[in-house]
Image (cartoon, rainbow, N blue to C red; front, top):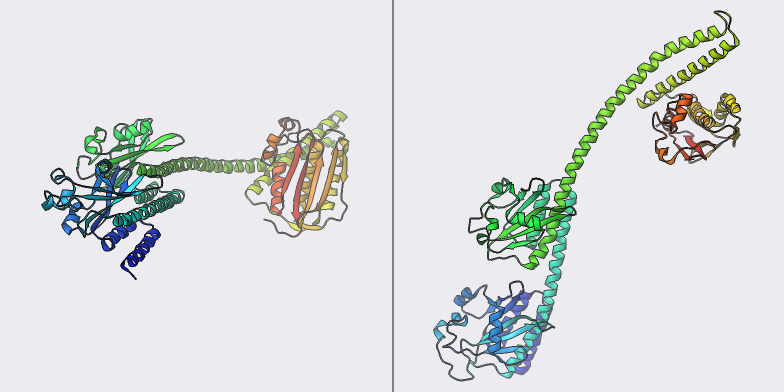
Length: 606
């Protein structure tokens, strides 16, 4: 294989390796290695444009003496100076230029740093390479924008590059341009992925942690991964008192910062009022930061970024980050920082809502405790009144019956009518007292149920017989849609009788004379399902969710008319529930109601 063929093969292998790389620093190192190892140059530098700072930064270098490398490490060149050099340079190819220095004129520029002993040496021949000459091989994106450049130096033959050398450099310039553009895309994608992961971490911290300090620490750590800083402070804004209240800080002055509650002034105050991000490049030259603890120390907090913490309610606080003056915050870093500031604002708002929720919970808990005490007092009162009423009512009932029978003298028909009314009312009060006692026992879970096999059809017919006079008195039509074929259930006969009587009795009472009442039953999921339908007054929609509450009746006028106090449906539903069943209804105002309940075949009470 000839030398030219070997060189071509080597060039293509290097080119393939460069195109496979995805890291800019790796790409640049590979290129400077290739130029110094294979293409006749003693040294080479590679610079990349820092768009934020608008200068070119030295990213890879090879072949220079150690002393020179130490002096040029981290070197940067302004875009303006490079463009001026290119204007003066001779164009050798599409992206290759050479700046031919005049030693006497350029003795003080950067290039003299490399070889100070040769600054004044004259160029021996027009085609000779002078130590102050500079070659540029530009990296450009598809739109022609300058991405960076190579500076091959010290050609081995000490001559200005030939057309063949320029062709090789042009190839590397093109390859590097493509590879760098791709690497920038990959870098941007990786940065975006890293940002989203960091934001996911902070989102999880906000959702999982109930400790604001822990949450802020997590957010600060993830933000520091994306936008490096030395210290951070978070302030709440108290708009009512025009104060800045520090709630989180890091660094050597934590105690001083957290103790520094002050007026809504300075940099943080300005950001809170404007709602806009502010950058301070040199804190020593900005009077707005004079009152920050430790700011007088020249070694720290030289560059600052202050970001408003916004929620739907407006600015709630300010986040400040600090780092050395030499590491100024860029616009990209500002854009990356703002989502983290949003998460800080959310964390603060969540903490505030949790505090409000806790206060509300404590208030509700106190009210609940007080209501329980009132319930106990009420239950005690109900028990006392019920027991105290029962004895005199029994006595009154007995004496009225004896008087009505003529035991104490002649009783006229008119008196008989009055005695009948008295007995009716005493019986109603007795029923009321019994219901109140039963309700109290249900509430205290002391009501005992006596389970036995019963036939719901037979119990229903017993209830209809008990209510026959009331039904006939209002001329209602009652249809029963079942015979005796209902299965036997395990239930308390007396209590189920009361439940059915309550439902049918309500239908009778709240249906106008000449109404229609239908009673049906079927099997529903292992339970006997019984229902009572009427075409009576119905229940207003806004009152339906309260119909099973204690002491509630939808129509206050009915209370005045018949003296009932709304405990029937509450008690009935509780009895059914104790049997392992359920009770519900459908109703429309003015069209009637249908009440349902179920009792399991064999299920024991709950």
